[in-house]
Length: 377
Image (tube, rainbow, N blue to C red; front, top):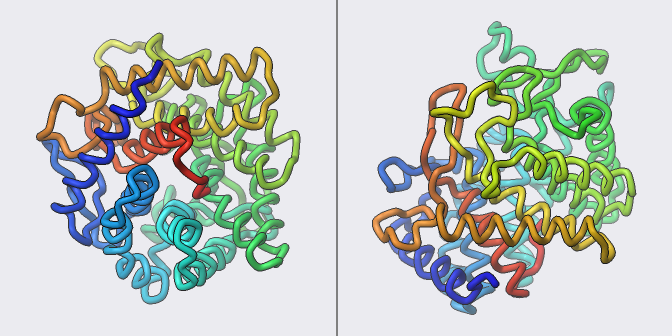
């Protein structure tokens, strides 16, 4: 049995301490155990606010709601004054900040901001290729950057709930149609026959013609980057929740099984499933936290049977591994909840650190198993 009460207390206490230190700042990753910050939250800022909303639910302490809202001016400024800095990760930023606020408190201002962010995400849709453009052109003229005009990445699947929610709230089917079109395009191009995933896929932006799979984070173009695989699990599980499309459920289950078949014995994967040698290579605890959260969502849609039992066993076993061997429960000087995440092995950045998204998904899974949270997605 997982010590859920002890796990909740750890999450709540450390997050409360961090909140007092962080103020309105948005954490990005740790260096020597201390979080660094980004003025606009980069792509990860929403996970810090989401973590505070989880703690609000688990504790009932309104101080967490105040911390969650302390940085809202940063998100608002970015959406309305600097929308050019947004990309497909708009869901990660605004879903966990403003939809969570609206769902938990009925804040109508939060609802409006969330709907405006959904419009910004929908505006990235390429109708010829039927996909949401992932990244912006960072460096005009540079080959990889220019390909971004027609690039999707697997992470976007977990941002689609913002569009599905907006469709339900407004009755505007264009939000739902955009999300469904992107999910279908992703299924046709990024999900391989063995249910492993490409990190990115490139299209001809003017015609929408599919070209090839490419990686930015993985070992090589045909490898399976583990964090990308974990995004696919939850992304398709939530797509099924909103649509009831059995194909999405099958993809979620297929990608989950592919993950579990390749993961290390303790449930924590290497940074890429396809590396030729594991010696000296880092694990990625963040991929495990994302996978567990997605697998718990997926399991909730399955009837009693071996598939559901296997998923639930993996989720609980991996949470125990994260708690016992990857958490900072005995390291009060560490600000992150979960240690030993790998940011970008290929680029040599954040190779052994904590991330807000790893902290968030660990806490989400604990809250879910405790029966103490609503879904923000």
